Length: 256
Image 1 (cartoon, one colour):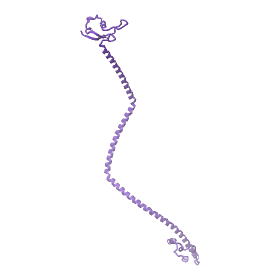
Image 2 (tube, helix red, strand yellow):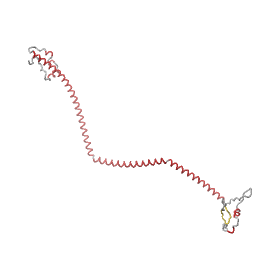
Image 3 (cartoon, helix red, strand yellow):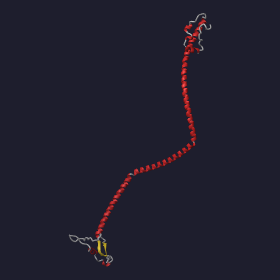
């Protein structure tokens, strides 16, 4: 006969069934058999106070099952704890991301601006390179003109230095001429004064001779001495005058 371990149904707790024929459900004719009595044979009553509901005894096969169930319970508890920890970690991560959302937005904007600046920088570098190439080409084309202008500029500089030297010479000459002119002006003042005196003497003598030609007017020469008695410088100035009387002229020599 086939023997197996089954479980009784219709109760709140699971009850292990041992040494029950496997074809008990198939025997319809055994319906009057009290199944509970058959099950109770494998249980021992352990109550010091009297009859009670039979407590199922632990068969040898139940030991490993209980240890397995306890291990499963521990595993379940550990899994629950792990799930709680992971949930808290996810919540913390979410809060951190939510708190850093503004910084992330700023970083994104800065990154976009940096990329735009890099693009503009590259464009400017390309434009500068092309401009530099064009300038070099133009410099090569106009190099001859530049050299000619440089030579002409050097020539003008040399001429300018020569003109400056001539200007200094002319300035020195002008200064000497100014000093000479000043001396001539001083001589002119002296000559004019002498001329005034001579004209006054001639006018006086002429007037006196006209009024009285027979009289001796030689004493006038004592008032206005002749030019012979003056120094060498005054005589040189006297010779230059055209209106003065000749040297040695006296009253008697004047026309009547």
